[in-house]
Length: 68
Image 1 (cartoon, rainbow, N blue to C red):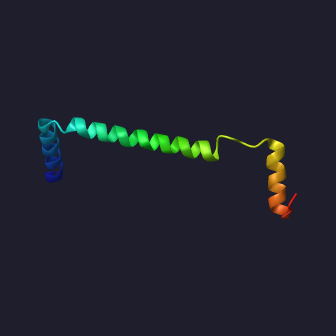
Image 2 (spheres, helix red, strand yellow; image 1 turned 90 degrees about the horizontal axis):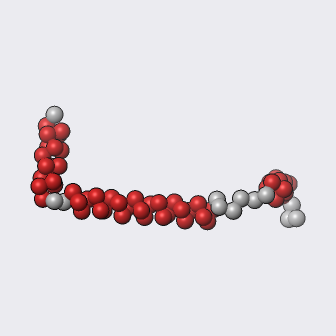
Image 3 (cartoon, one colour; image 1 turned 90 degrees about the vertical axis):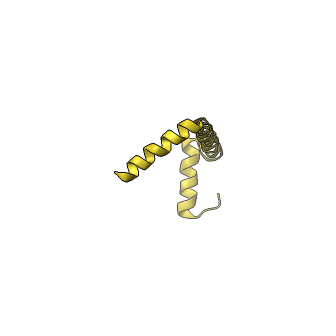
């Protein structure tokens, strides 16, 4: 219970010091950066799927270890 009361006291101090706005801005910036990184990963690796025939030939080439 003491930890919870310390947490609430800390939140009250942040609210009184008007630091909660800064915290919200920092969290928003971090979330925007994460979304941008996720989009970049998607664009690099998943946005251009292969046609079914190309997938089949690629898998066959990998399994049978053929060059073409």
